[in-house]
Image 1 (tube, helix red, strand yellow):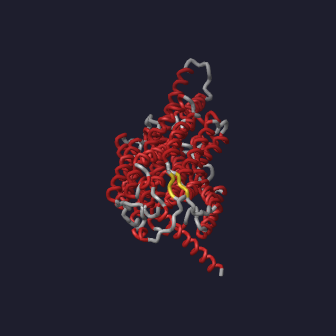
Image 2 (cartoon, rainbow, N blue to C red):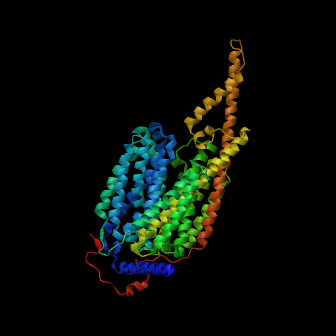
Image 3 (cartoon, helix red, strand yellow):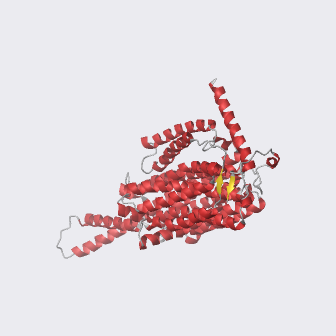
Amino acid sequence: MRSRKNGGAVAAATQLQAAADRHAATAHQPWGETLSRRRIGFVLAAVLLGMLLSALDQTVVGTAMPRIISELNGLQHYAWVATAYLLASAASMPIWGKLSDAYGRKRFFIAGMVIFIIGSALCGQSRNMTELIAFRGFQGLGAGAMMPIVQAIIGDIFPPAQRAKWAGVMMSVFGVATIIGPLLGGWITDTVGWRWAFYVNMPVGVIALAFAIVALPGHVSVRRHTIDYVGASLLVLAAVPLLLGFSWAGTTYAWGSFEVVGAFVFSAVMWIVFFLREMRAAEPILNPRLFENSIFAVSALASTLQSAAMFGAIMFLPLFVQGVLGKSATNSGIVLMPMMLSAIVTSIAGGQLLARTGRYKALVTAGFAAVAVGAYLLSRMGVSTSQGTLALNMVVMGLGLGIAMSAFTVIVQNQYPTHRLGEVTAGLQFFRSIGSTVGLAVFGTILSTRFTAELAKAMHVSSVPKALSNPQVLVSPDKRQLIHDSFVKQLIDKIMHGKPSGLPNTTALYAQAQKQAESAFVAFMDSVRHALDAAIIDIFRLAVIVGILGFISVLFLKEVPLRRTHALVETEAEAEPEPQSAAEGVEG
């Protein structure tokens, strides 16, 4: 009896969704058909500024973090500043996307931007790490609205074929932010102080907000919507422990620790409850039936794998350049410039090609092939790799990442009507966040485990002291100098121990001891370089596997040519129109 009731509820929910789709298909007026070209230009300026604001923030703040930690005395809470932002933005994305579908993009895009600007001001006022973490989480809630709604707004204006070229341009904003963000963050921190790494968001945000208020059309719907508050709560309870477990694993706690395993188990239970709830909901927050569409399922998997590979390269390539090759360029933007410039080129060019042909499978397949080849080339590097070889390898990797970065959003949006763009875009962004979090956790664990094992082998000890177990600390110029001074002093004391003072040759003995200590430190740092090389090469080898898995997954991607109109299917024009209220549609 219960199964029959459940089946009836599921069938009723499916019929409600189909009815909503039919109603919206006849009632919705795409913005590209109702706005002037000049107005569309202002809308594009608003969304580009919003995306730039969100993308720049992460790279600028990342550069300022060492100074922030020093002033607020919060090394033990270092990871939480980024984790709070990530948890809030990722968990809230599907909720913001669904709300924008139901009640219009403008109000929630503006709300997200206001939250982000207020959060930036509060972060700049932080007096301790606890306040900074809390305010950073609040700021992340705003970022969770801006990123998916920006993509949905582009979908409101352009049909999929035209949408592709603009998606490529918008994804290139991320690449530009990766290059100039660290440079800007370093300059701000050194000249006016780290608090302006947050305050700088305010003037940019106010300009973007003004464009959004003036340019974005309002939307009023008289159709009654049912907000699934229970589903939204369950989504947060499922997503936050999952992301938290991966953020903790291998760094704060061991993978097999009670905290990490407990977070994963609780998340799994909540995901099951969330799935059961959403299958019965009239308007689910993140509809499990999205995965009934094979194109969405494959795109979500491929995007997850691509994010894992991309963030692995972005995080660990600067460490390889500085720690293994010994280059002085510590700025991650400068280090990553070849890869990000090539990604920008292919992101824009790929979008243009998609717009002209409407075909995407060959393009994304070639993109994942380039990612796998690029990761393989990176995995063959070592301590003697030249700067030219490094740049070439990064360019190959970037070519593949640029193609895939912009394509999947358009591919997925092509499968759904305009009034569901917020939901499906936010869902795809959510899985990208999962991919980056999982990738960083797994890659970080590999780095730490392999590095300490190789360093212990070189030092002929059973375990490496905790102070020497973090390679990112060892390659920091300030920390390296502290370790050098301590290392040399201990060796000199050990060599001079038992030598009588006051002898005529004491000065010569001390000079000889100092020379031996310096030689020993050089040998130790050489061991560090080789241990770090072995660890990072393992990361790139795993990235090769991730790239190959992504390549295999897109082979199963069904190709449906990108639509050149907003209509989902031709038969929609033949469907019997439903009465439309004068209050429903777009407000100028």
